[in-house]
Length: 310
Image (cartoon, rainbow, N blue to C red):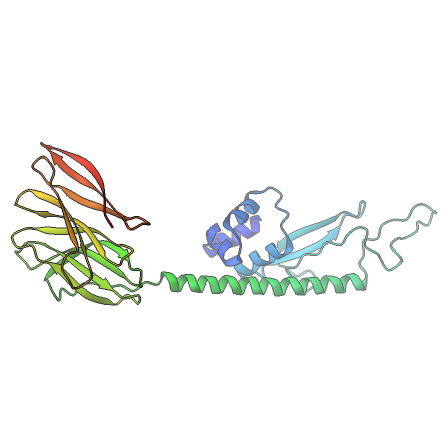
């Protein structure tokens, strides 16, 4: 494992990244790395080596303890040892049959001594197992590569910057997905030197900018903080507006889409004089709208939460 960790560090891979390449769970790989005696399966070892691209840097050597015929498996750096480098591990059982029917008689007539050499049949079996393991490792690597490619596609988002085609200045404060695909944003827009107005913009599922809607509030500065879509497809916006200036009230309203009058409006004016805001919005599973914000009572702000009809 120390050698695998060296290769992982050299490749600049985190444990999570290596696990993803090898088609493993991150928790499984972490247990192997942190275990003093990992005793991993051949297919796991093969997947790790393939994911690191270190097939030519790791070699598996199988050998026996001469006295007890106990198989030992050693993973070492690939060097010339009189055989082609390989990365497959097969440990021959001490009970495996040998060329002379499983044993060798002592010249002194004592008990048979275990044989440490392998038969041709055993070698062929090893090669077949190694071939199957190599094919499985190749398939695991292909699956990991395909998953990584899909992840790159999923996270490859297009960028968009407002051209200011409707109002010279604008900003987006909230965003929500749409049930039919795409998403919608809300914020504010204004021309230079004028008041802000709530601005809502729709985007397609491909990320293309679509219709824009502005809520006209003459003489009242207004901004949208949060947005969501209810189960009927209405767009719910939570924000604030000055009505009258300089007292800012929380403003929650529903619109049918890019066009059409407000379906309903809620103005929340705190008991005191100060900015009342509604920057938090969540849509419930039954269509209820939950709002959170703050309002002034005398000269002190206080939090509020309310649920509105669907």
